[in-house]
Length: 268
Ligand SMILES: NC(=O)c1ccc[n+]([C@@H]2O[C@H](COP(=O)([O-])OP(=O)(O)OC[C@H]3O[C@@H](n4cnc5c(N)ncnc54)[C@H](OP(=O)(O)O)[C@@H]3O)[C@@H](O)[C@H]2O)c1
Image (cartoon, rainbow, N blue to C red; front, side, top):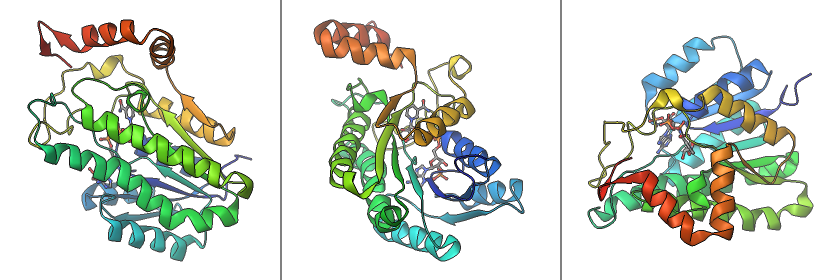
């Protein structure tokens, strides 16, 4: 029997990309799943695809405290408990800090950091009762700042600090707090990444076909949850970047600059 069978799992941002792949896999594994997103139509489509399965969806913007409280309350009302919370909803950006309007950075922090804080706050008592798991879907950018992504990197570093502190607080409660770091994964995130004016950039400078699929990424995340890992970096490129950054930070600055820039212009 699957580790997830019968468990109540909350996935924020489950209507697209990695979150949707998590919802699909969790339902296949017999979990009772709840998810949210800002767009009703995408959630409706998800419900239609999984008609007859234990899936609860609510329209909620995780950057809003009230939405997160209502969403988590509705999950408890529907399923009676929460075993696992996967803080997945997230947005990215692409703009140099010298050009960016500060609203872009505020938006990144509101969704990626505060969204994680709000949902975790409202779900934590139930997760403690269940001796369950809190997960942050983070990024390599949470270990190593990436150019053109100052707000994204800051928000993921903040998520790591928040989750690491919480992990230590609840260690004796039997709760596992963990964060996973996908590498480049094919999804919608780059199309809707915020530009310097906090508008979706609507162009994708990267080749999605060369990336890990959202399905494979979700499989790795579920495996890490089941093994109650502390943290999991999902790609070799990610692991190599962390190793290089720890031991050769100056060289890593240059390599990352080379990867993201061409002739002084931000390429990716
Ligand atoms: N894809 C990658 O290469 C990659 C790499 C490393 C880490 N990650 C992380 O993985 C997570 C998922 O990313 P993804 O690539 O799957 O992105 P995605 O394809 O853009 O999907 C994002 C999902 O989150 C929802 N969402 C966005 N903002 C939200 C908000 N304010 N409130 C509630 N839901 C919201 C979206 O639905 P609505 O738009 O309808 O709200 C959608 O369902 C993110 O935390 C991201 O940082 C992704």
